[in-house]
Length: 313
Image (cartoon, rainbow, N blue to C red; front, side, top):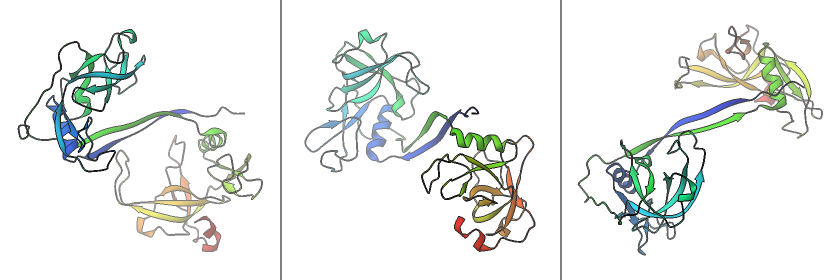
């Protein structure tokens, strides 16, 4: 059996969020090196602050100052920090109940080893040298044996409140396409399209999935399909994607390759976008060294009859 492919993949995108008055005040405070919580009607002080009481669902906006010192309520040692974590040396994840707060804040504690960390230990905030109005303005916590410390700033004294944040969401993982799609990808590198036939319904699926999505039985019989195919449905793309060197507008279509029982998608080129239509006969175009078709272009054949592809819409 050929080796199954695998490769590291990263999914990353910026997440932009606007802030209401509570979160804006909290992050603005971090930028200015003080901490705000929010007080509920029954007198609890929540840090980090939320806009609605988690018990009663009432809107809450009564902001109060809390300490920059606090007490560890629980912790876990992290011996091998990962990319993007607060510290690049071993540290403890801690829940810290800041002085004056009734809930705990999750962050990192810079400590020389797990033997010096304990529930109940006193800590204080170590502020980042450069602050922008984000939770990372707290660089970490550090052990502290001094007096309680609360920094207060009166409302109206802070200029340019933080109105929104941009957080980079990222997921690193290793992807393996499995046996069936490994064979499909290897065939693409040879400019061939290979699917698998279901032993029950006899449909040929491209790309293959290793099992029939209709019958639920395993598939293993390989079938070469195409190279030509028929446009079943399509859309016109008018918004240019970042890092994609394709001028808009262009057409992205579902294409039923000859002999396949499932349409795959691909870009249509070699024809004005407003002349693409259902039933258009197309063929793949490969770039030099490409491992998959760059796009599909018209073959010049007459359009396919609707009845030949209506089940593949």
